[in-house]
Image (tube, rainbow, N blue to C red; front, side, top):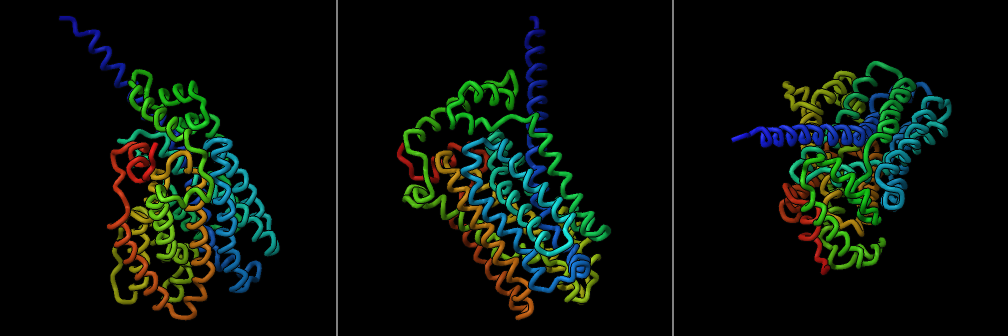
Length: 421
């Protein structure tokens, strides 16, 4: 029996599988460059606090405004992100946001007075608000169900790397140079977007069926049978097209109540657990605990990727921050964004995603602006409040958040939303 044709077929399938992995990897890499921008923007204010405050003679209130105005810009960007990405596509939206981020970092670098410093921080925040929605949505929409969890986790990994590398570099370079370095991943993503495909699900949503088939086949491999996946996406999209496009007020219908509760609840609990208070002002926390800010920041860099242990009673504060940071990175840091990208049907994803992302940034702004004042009121009381909210989060996740592993987006959305199609 001649096994050559069968062997050739297997070899070809293996090559196509490898090509698919490479295509997905490169596409995801370009997308998560935006996640790195997200992380570097969050991590910027903490390591430069002392240097920047002394250089421009900023008061506590002025620096608190600088730290928190990032989230004001992010709120506005988040509010517009769903509509923009629905209108021009996921890929173009990432490029649009990076233009604002690049301009913002340049303005910060050139700033000599606080008004321009805040303006630059606001522009970075606006672009970051858009990125925080579109990156996880894009990754979820291009990956097959058996790889989606792995690839969407890279979003959180790159946020952590952005924060960590910014912390590390901020311990050795000035605030202006660190702002200039912040432009690098923006440029990387803008250039990379030329070579990656649009989201196949967005193409289906806008009725560009021929492009949808081509892109889906490209992402899965030339010899891969995409007929079942293609049919499922087409059928689900066509059923949803019979329903008018969901506006912001349509989200509050009964059939979307659970997905909205899960999305909004996870984002609110994520922020009110205190992460941005710690991320934005970690150096001041270490100083107040009698620990060198540089040692503390470098330790945070290590724990972003690897869980660590610090002994000694005098290092309880450091240990607490490191354990919190490591635990957050493993779970609540990225998973709410992944869940958000999975649970909303394509007809309301823009509006729902914008709302959920705005909730996240409103919470972030409240925490980042109030954190210094809360610490002046009672450091212990501040962290008792955060600990209580983290406990509530455990109960919320156990009772309400669905498991999405190894399920297509269409299966997840159909099961969680009570939609009669």
